[in-house]
Image (cartoon, rainbow, N blue to C red; front, side):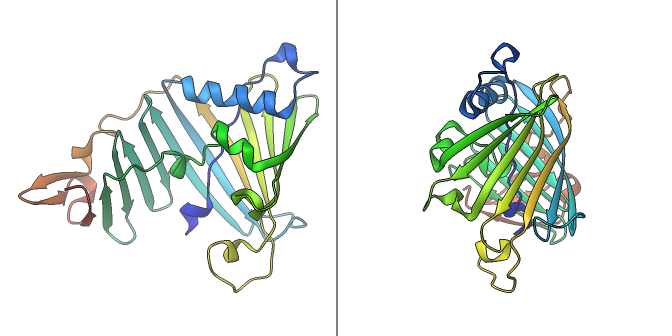
Amino acid sequence: MKNTIFSLVFLCFVNACLAQKATANDVLLRAFEIYEKATHYKMNMTYNIYADDQSASPKEVTKAVYYKEGASNFYMKMDETEKIFIKDVFIVISHSEKAMMVSRNNNNPSEILGTFFKQSLKEYSKTDIKDYKTFWRCTLYPAKGSPSAVYKYVTIDIAKNSYNIIKQKYFFNVPLEQVYGVNNSDKKEVLEIIVNNFDKNTFVPKGLFNSVSYYKPEGKNYVATGKQKGYEIISDSK
């Protein structure tokens, strides 16, 4: 559930000459372009969950790393879980369970990256932008009845000097556990996502987007390879 909850939003790149007149939509749409056009990058993230919007310290902290290579290769590692898109193949590895899923379904990479694609802006009925001297803060208010209505609002901070995203905060409108079918809390948590590093000059580790690093065919089945050797594989890829 943790990896479903932690959706990552990649939003940056603001044109400085439009800073004083830019709307939130201007900023967000320009941000999509830099990530869509980047041929490769690495991002290190910290995910903090606060009990509510009054809490000073997070109750849970999780580190994650993301890689992108080309238009269709994406990788994410969070705790003991890895998720990899290699063209039309989607791989999920749970090291804690020593298991792997391999799928050729048409999954959208945004499921692991948490990317706000352009169409997602339609889920927000109102957007604001404020100037905080060294960064802009875009605030998005979900439209009633939209999938994003689980949030009261979302804030996204973007640095002026680099046009990179600094931080995102999701203020839940309902208890976070309730969103995913668990009704044991009445707290309305806040999810904070901090970008610790965004590197467009990094080299993707060798074999990261090569399926044989994870599994290989053996007869009518697949067997796990590399550090996953011996893991159980569930697959609909045949």
